[in-house]
Figure 1: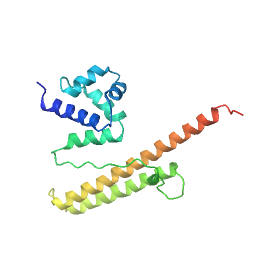
Figure 2: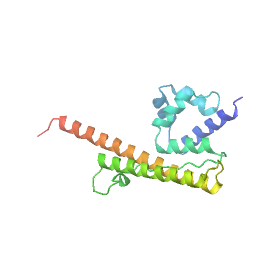
Figure 3: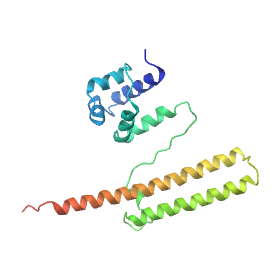
Figure 4: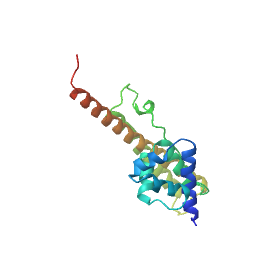
Length: 177
């Protein structure tokens, strides 16, 4: 008899499959396991090992990641926010290019926000260890902004690296006449 966690994960896999987000074959490719093993997860007969869940999360794409996060945070009171992975918002400094300067700008913005957060926390504390719920909610919002900016800076660097790799490969390809 599967436990609640198995039921939750098997239901999640079934939903992902029924919505054509990911197939058993794709799950097998990602994990390196055979399709029969994946089918046993889907039916709730067995549990995947955490490293396989991690592989699925890592390589399953945005929709799979969002579904896993949603499933894990359901009924917890936690709120998951998503950062769309578009190139539109990677030009942080607005110069029309996506380069290392954009990552530096994002990281500096994050540090500025972090400095503001620490200042707010120190002022709100007022020598006491007690802080109002409103102040705590404000801290969470500021921390979320810092993480988004740090993630944005990371995405800029990943984009620059991908573009540089693509250009190097393009230069190595023989020209056909």
